[in-house]
Amino acid sequence: MARARSTSAPFLNEQRLAGCTRFPCEALTMEVALGELADVQRWLSDDELREIYTSSYWNDIEEEKKKEWWIEDGDYGRCRRYLETSKLMEEYQQAEAFIRAIPQDDLRIADLAAGTGWTTALLSKLDNVAEVHAVEISLHRLERLLPHSVAMFTGRAEKIRRYLGSFYDLRLPAKSMDLVFLSQAFHHADRPIKLMVECDRVLKPGGRIVMVGEHGVGGSWLMRRFFKALLRQRRIVTDFHQLFPPDPLLGDHYYRRSDYYFLFVAMGYTLEHRIAATGQTMFIADKRG
Image 1 (cartoon, rainbow, N blue to C red):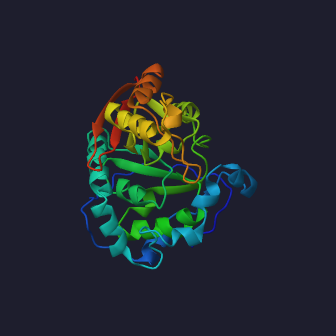
Image 2 (cartoon, rainbow, N blue to C red):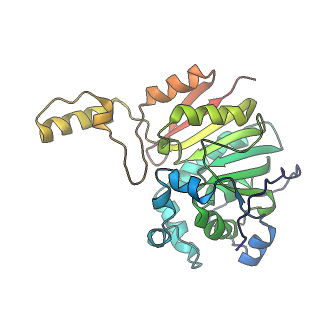
Image 3 (tube, helix red, strand yellow):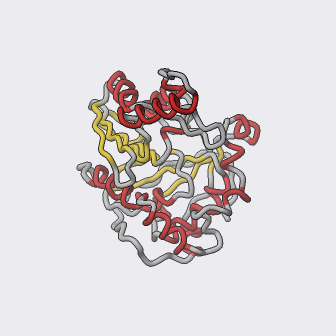
């Protein structure tokens, strides 16, 4: 596997590379995927990484080996089945339509909290994408699993850059990205305003943020939690954060749909949402040009 190093990576040359996101598709060999991937760039020291409140869980390799997305053993079929049955692939394809629709053929994308890199691999295949910058706090995911994701989905490794870093502190130039992509990611932020400010900093005027896999708590879910608390605790709970406490292990936080609208509109974005195939909420935010 490629070794992590601390130097900064220059942007990739702008390219127009054809590709598709058909699923399933023929896999590349690992030798090809690794041969074309640039080394992981380290934005965080070991001490800085340990200070991130959920990093110990997401860097637990033995725990990861129990998951459907552990593909270092070459069992791509299990991961593909998981993405299909969970409807995560269908959810991604719904989001992809909002990226394909951008009238530009050299998009630079920041894939934040990129995880195992399966979305990174698929994004790299889009005809109108020139670069994908994958940011993740799990070193083994970047070094050991992302290359397999590229191989599994025949991603364009030459378009991809990998960074061990926090999405609160992106070491990317201001106004350098055309799109910020977050899959199952934004709700892991315990400081959503700080995250939004950082996304806005690296996004070009007229750029787009696409978020998928968000809880987007609405009225019906809120009422279910209210009555659940009433029945179990024999008291009336009206505080949202008591009804929806964060997960201390996984780092999940719950935000109301209105919270997303308030945050993005306050930042000067136009925002719309869709209910994805998974039942979770997808948000598409456009920055003023």
